Length: 329
Image 1 (cartoon, one colour):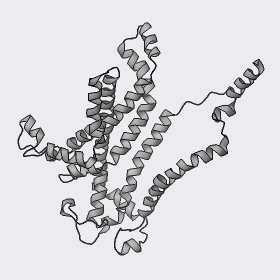
Image 2 (cartoon, rainbow, N blue to C red; image 1 turned 45 degrees about the horizontal axis):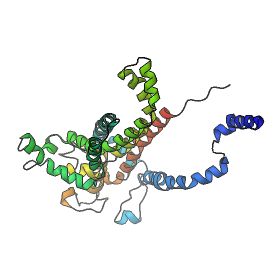
Image 3 (cartoon, rainbow, N blue to C red; image 1 turned 90 degrees about the vertical axis):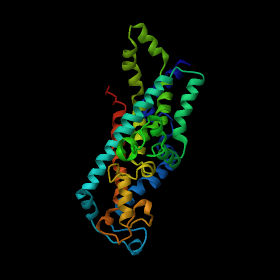
Image 4 (cartoon, rainbow, N blue to C red; image 1 turned 180 degrees about the horizontal axis):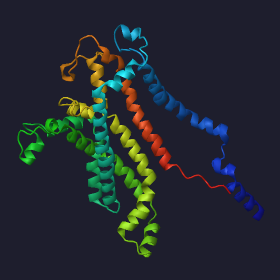
């Protein structure tokens, strides 16, 4: 009996068991992971590579170029690098993501989760319901609700603040969409942090309290290190979703006035429609119907730009959260 127990311990401590804890083997593990990898290849990798290829052509969704696209080399990429409007859009996107996702949603979601960690009863359910309501409603619905809230003449906000005639979306476009997105997406990070806080063993806090650590030291030395991997993944998720936000901003400000709130998603859409790449002809979108010009030849490239920043952030977050390498011997 003792020999069998020792043999099982030796197998568990062997390098092979560490590399393959499930005991499936490389072949069986590859077959199990194959469906998920195929989905990733079909819906993430292939579209990114296809868009990269489209950036080297004059492809259109309609017209002669849709059936017979030809290569333009690196002209599309060169035009993007030289376009000041693209640089301006990238800077606005950085402000939007930093303000609404990194600072806003992550910080506010953690604060709400921290306040609700020990709460119980109707108050906790009420706060969770109010926060979740903004998240589960369709994007177009909440966008039009905010249009009514910020209306210059009969808006609810102006009525409450007694500021008639204030056009919030026009006078403060970036602040408006940042606050809007914080209100919209805080529920996700709240749920993530609330679940993560419940997984921290209470014994850690009891031992720290016995050692004389105050509330701040317990939070800094125990809570934050325990939440670091979850926080990195949550930040990655909200950064990617915020970077590609389109419907909310388009409905609320359409990137205006002018281009004061034209983030990268709106810029790509406007370039595509104004260049007649997309078959849309509606005065609401401010679409020009004249034949496409040079700017239309790199419209497909902007979609690929939406992939680069999230991928870079994914690589950084993966590197930060990877376990340390085991020391030899």
